[in-house]
Length: 228
Image 1 (cartoon, rainbow, N blue to C red):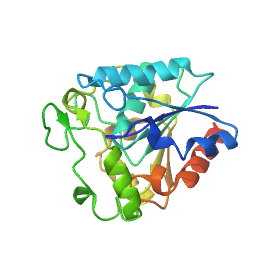
Image 2: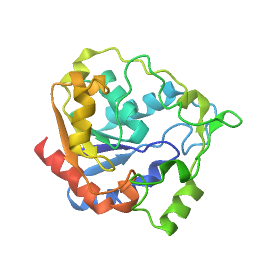
Image 3: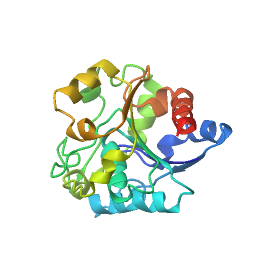
């Protein structure tokens, strides 16, 4: 199966470097996406540009691909399902949730010179990053890319309710499936509350399993793909 991989804030397609070989060994075809403004030097990139890049990867895939969104890019994966509900076979959200229509994409930290730089590890102290050793933290921080302000402050626009029929798997790394279900039941995740089929899957890792548990993440994605 073709698997479209979309990394979260500050990451480019190389974030999946240790995941893709395992997926290939398991018989799948990973397609990491280079997002405008996160790996191509496009400082003026917008949220619409990033959505278009993910949709283009979906269109180029064979069959009905799985679309994997990590962290904030969970919204990009969901926007792809909204744009191509008949083409996307399933959506996998890794440690993130889709924003609702009209919400900002990822206006989370201060911007500097028109972009949101990686804020360092302090805001992610605790379960988010406890499983990252110092070498990995240095490597990830050194490679982190400031995300254009027009991306982070872009407004999510959803239009096609057929997206709710696309199967969703929520991978729960730094939080538990039970916590995620509580948030859904409480109405805090309205897009997931309306989805017809949502499966919650536990993964014993922090917020960046592609760095701390790449083989485990790849096998989990392969298991989902096999069911699809």
